[in-house]
Amino acid sequence: MPENPPLLDVRDLRMHFPVRGGVLRRAQAWCRAVDGVSITLSAGETLGLVGESGCGKSTLGKTIVRLNTPTAGSIHFNGTDLAPLSARALKPHRRELQMVFQDPAASLNARHSVGEILAEPFLIHGVGTAADRAARVTALLDRVGLPASSADRFPFEFSGGQRQRIGIARALALNPKLIICDEPVSALDVSVQGQVLNLLLDLQRELGLAYLFIAHDLAVVKHVSDRIAVMYLGRIVELADADRIYRHPAHPYTRALLSAIPVAEPRRRSQRIVLQGDVPSPIHPPAGCPFHPRCPHAQARCRVEAPALRTPDTKRPDHQVACHFDL
Image (cartoon, rainbow, N blue to C red; front, side, top):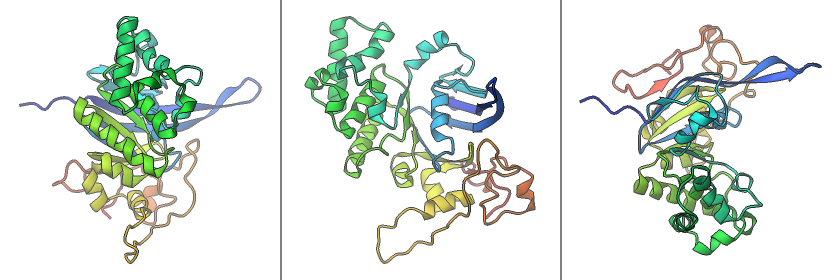
């Protein structure tokens, strides 16, 4: 029997922002924030997306939900390419594709009560009567562990973890199939992070949600992800099953990231891989492999030829790495 098509199929996605200057503010260069990314995501699956700050993770998430209009590439969601659609044509698809933002304080309208914030998706899409919307708001609050009385309060009256629960409730309002989680716990206290992560996992089991989970904390990503994609300078450099990528990382950048994870055992020392230099500018990316200026294994080929994602081990076709060599 043929396999079910993926819920999300992104192909060669590019998001280039103009760098303007001069009196006429013309584009003098382009910032290649996302530069040819291809990923798939199945229903009910969690794909973790990791990388250093500035590598393009959040831009990729915002482009997939069409907060940005992509420069090139396709975003097939539930069988429809979202990339060329107008705002009007996108509206019905937005019900099934939602986003949870990194900073809950900034993503919630401070002038609206929580009830108004959660009712807004229903108003925009013309769902239910006023009484129906009030009942749905109460049900959403209960689902994320907040009392019904929260509807009459304002975002500033809540803690950071509670505000993120409100953001999650808003994302759930229209029964989506996929939620882009853009570093949903990085702005929270460590004691609260686990609560929010467990809430997301419980909701996934109950509702069959798929997540694109963006984070820079590799320990968090391992806890929630089925597969992990490692991103560097706008490109995917490694993609594999979560356990595989932690046990057998194949790309030098992935190995450096993993070596930075703190070890819980005081007597056990991990060999830290310290990368030299800074991340190159996405406005002027290096020729060839984007990682070669910092790679301890770089050779002459790396400076002129960009590696494509390939399968180094034919026995593991699900493990892909963008490197010329088997290290």
